[in-house]
Image (cartoon, rainbow, N blue to C red; front, side, top):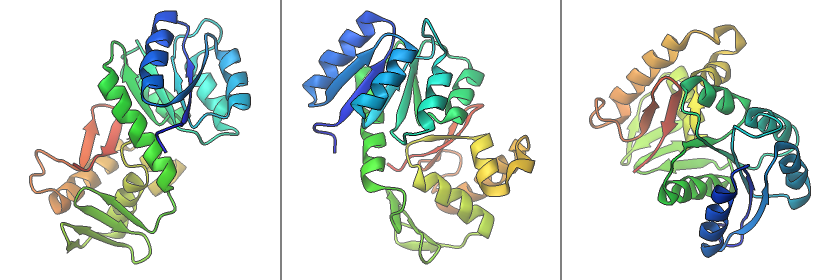
Length: 228
């Protein structure tokens, strides 16, 4: 899936676009680019990218608005690449429909890793009956979770949380996204529910809950399932 995948860059910094063009083309990607939000949205419709990289600080419209508009008709993974490092900016972008974010200055190695995760998830599809992340496996048909081949007994709520994280492995899910998916809209602000259940999950699936290798905390934002 990586080779030949189409990537759209929406960023008003010409040096960033040039860097991404050179680096991503060297890895076999097909590139298109836009220097403004409106042009980016139009190019997304015609170029039909497999993945989109969006800057939040664009001259015409905010990057979060781009995400919201593209999400109305496209499921292509969207990675936010931005100089804004405030937690709320990241949360708002993820809640708008972005899959991941990277803060400038960034390393190409990290960006390439995030791109591979997003493209692999799209290629695999979220409807796969068996989801694996390292030694962790979630069987969606039997509603069964195993770690290194050993079944882990989970409550229905714990299972729903780990299933959701596994379906979006590598992607940051905000507290709000997890709450809405598991408990519905009425629990949007009760982030302590998520912290309690994640703590319980870690005690069951992690060898060392204090140094988790599966459920990674994105401080102040949410969680990411990252099997190593």
